[in-house]
Each structure stands twice: as C-alpha cells, then as structure tokens.
Length: 162
Image 1 (cartoon, rainbow, N blue to C red):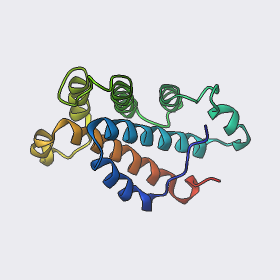
Image 2: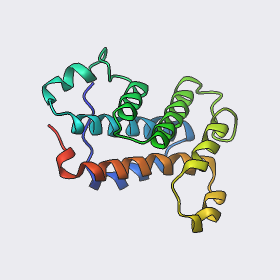
Image 3: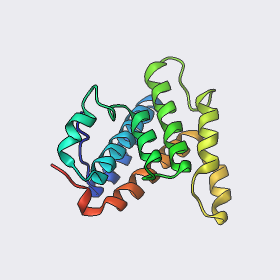
C-alpha cells in the first residue's frame, strides 16, 4: 500500500489526536504513523520511483514495518539506534493491536520495551530529570514524534510525492 503523505503542518494535529486516544488507540495509530513516515522516507531515497508501487504493495518486499526498518538500516538511511527504536515501536504497536484485552503501557512486555525506548531517547544530559519523570505512554509517543519530525525534516519539500 502506498504510504500516505502527511505534511509537517499536519503533524501537531496528529499528535493532539494521539493524546486524546486510549492507550491502545495511541499505540496502534502512532506506530502506524511512524511506519508511514518510514515508507515515505524510503520512497524519498529511491532513485527509480517507477518501482515504488511494486516494492510497497501488499506482497512487496517493503510491505511490512519490519522489512522497511531492516532495509533502511542496511542501506545506512537510519542508524542502528534508530533501527532499535523503530523495532521497539513496532513491537509495542503490534502487541497492542494483537492483544486488545491484555496490553498496557504499565505491564510487561510493553513496559520493558518502553524502558528500552526511554534509555535510548535522544535527550540532552541536562534533561535526565525529564526522562525519569516521563510515564511509559509519554516515552512511546515522544519516541514516535521524534522519529517522524526528524525524518520529515530530512525529506524537506522533496519528500512530498503524489
């Protein structure tokens, strides 16, 4: 499926929407938003855009979040730390999607994955106190937002496609 282009101006509206959702809704929607941004970034990096539909279609080699993460990291489009962050976001999103009655940011395994996100969240050293005060849901949403904003910034206006 072709990733939907969302411009940077819409980002704040989307973040506000995620904050008004239940934990499950926030986890699934924001994780899917991250997957969409990663797909747009990979399309942006393509030199032959005529192959995009084939690569991103339902059975294409870039149809899943995990495949997109692996390719982006393998080709150096994202760092190992970013790949690790994206894999935790993917795991959390999938856990909430597939365990609707059991999933919670405050219980294992989501709590453990979010602890890992918290430890790799790129904050300045003088913000360590802020890091410690964040709850698990905030860590997840901030990790999602950070990736989306920095990636959309790397694409600039050239990241927009039809």
